[in-house]
Image 1 (tube, helix red, strand yellow):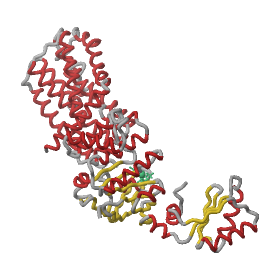
Image 2 (tube, protein in one colour; image 1 turned 90 degrees about the vertical axis):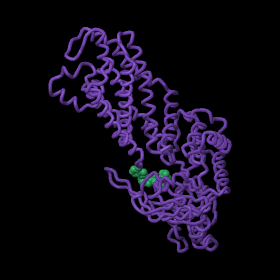
Image 3 (cartoon, chains in turn purple, red; image 1 turned 135 degrees about the vertical axis):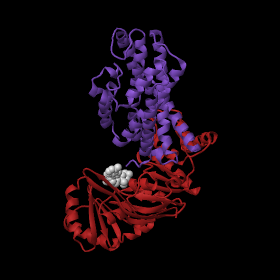
Length: 254
Length: 317
Ligand SMILES: Nc1ncnc2c1ncn2[C@@H]1O[C@H](COP(=O)(O)OP(=O)(O)OP(=O)(O)O)[C@@H](O)[C@H]1O
Ligand SMILES: [Mg+2]
């Protein structure tokens, strides 16, 4: 066990170092939600839909969606970096050392978590002058949800990358999956406004629970059903995804 | 024996069919040796090494590597060996020193010790002029030296080097040879693969020739050469000898003393039972047919001749 922590720390340090040497992508990841914040969010103040308040409350509605979008696009594509590492032989070099196979995954995923949490904080801080009101406790819980989302998304992306082993196969899959997941999570408009069948499908989408829960949290409600639901569902999915991805790291890559 | 394998097998299945990469390899490598794997492209050398290094699960057979069972205790095997893949493996954006330190730390070494080891490797492999630059800026030979240093930074009992000198200039190559000899002097076992006959000849205590997933010959360089009986006569027909060499091959291949004839450009290599008696006879045949020879050379079989005798192909071309 101590070697798991130590190895995870070593892999994390190296991954973080490499990310910081090439920080453009971290900034690019923030660009998209910032565009939405500046160019789209102002429209919402005058939109009325079920489950949606107008005026400044629109931000409490919209920021959770943007954070979730950030989490999705920030982690679903991390597998690309891993495919580069596979091709450069780095993964093979690591796999002949006694390093824990869990650490190979967790170290990288932790880097993605840290990156995402920093991006999320930046986004929230920028939103405050626009009228977002933030309470410390709920915000902390929102960030916890972001951590789970990042672990989940990154693990899935790494596992799929290790299976496909090629950018050409990963790119269409990641793009094809990202858009429907995003739309079905109610990022732009509340899912409550959707027809019954669409709402039905959206319940199979883990991101929807994250969005609903963060909306409650930004509104200052901590002990709602949506928050409990999101915590349980995301925790279970994240554990499963982490185990899945770590097993892919352990399997011989032929 | 630091490596012992029995009937090690591996095949790769894909939509286009099955490749039997390794078809039953029995190996015994003694401690402290430089053991060389010689074979053409696709022989199964890398696949065998990757199995022995725990990277690939064998389909069949068993192996004990550095005292640990490959299937039951892969973790123990990993702790005791070093492995340098054919294409290496470094992050483009990291420096050699950073890589060496991390590599040592992955083997459980403390930070201070890892820094010391990195400095020692940088000196031993003469990496100092570029060790603090990103690896993406290295030349092929510089990168290869870093790869090798990475596989050795934790002082393993046994190291696998997959084509350690491919792509190196003669100076770097002989430097790697010296380094391998030094490691052997310190008691390390080195298991390497190579396409270079002179490398196998000069560097390896024991050589296994692999072809088509099987080991077709094994022994010291001298033992292998003695397995090819007789001598080799090389006839050179000069730059304009394209027609002459074809004619000579036709004539000489059917002579009773000729075991086998092989053409390379305008040279003809003839494997004969006894060089001294065959030489005058074949000269008479050539003279009688107005074929002029520019050079004649009689020599003992080389490793390439061994290779040719065992596989029916030459490694030279
Ligand atoms: N991952 C793989 N999937 C499918 N086939 C493979 C795989 N790895 C190796 N092979 C096949 O197995 C055979 C043996 O390959 P291997 O890499 O072991 O040869 P080698 O002796 O190392 O050759 P070289 O000298 O070119 O490095 C080849 O036919 C190769 O195409
Ligand atoms: Mg090879």
